[in-house]
Length: 205
Image (cartoon, rainbow, N blue to C red):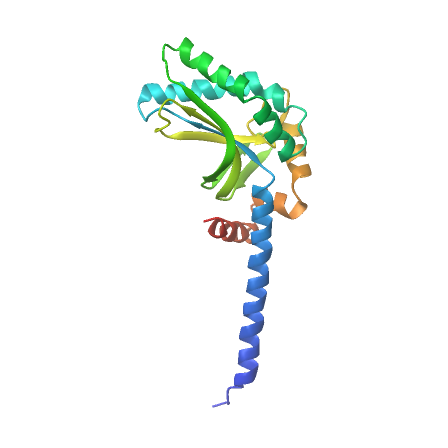
């Protein structure tokens, strides 16, 4: 029976461990960079009743339709956050206008802050995008008690297609806001990318 070279075995284990640590660190940095390049729209219903959930979707549609122009010329997350913060009064007005027109008197809270989100997959006409779980900056709109199920999309880059932005322009903005490796991480479908994305999900907990 051949003798085991323990020093060589230890060396192999250490090298593999070091490679794993370096790779995890790399994926972690990519995940953090993605989280720091995205502004999400987050709308929370008053409750989980069918009527409140339907109202939430109407508020969503109106905000996307009537507030999209505010973000049309934004080229970075910071510009998008500034546009949102500078127009919170108008965004709140749009939400309240829908709520009143539907016969409700719910109040509306509106602000930009970081929130934890689960993994989300977006189906686009030019391919799917999956964002790993983690903390993202978000325009948060709470309806009434804000105790119901929420809805979210990405306002920047404009994956929920804000007014005046085509699908191709949205994809171009997505490419411009991320590195090639980060773009591949959230859009790729190869086995290697899927494994990498699972690691990103775990790191985002």
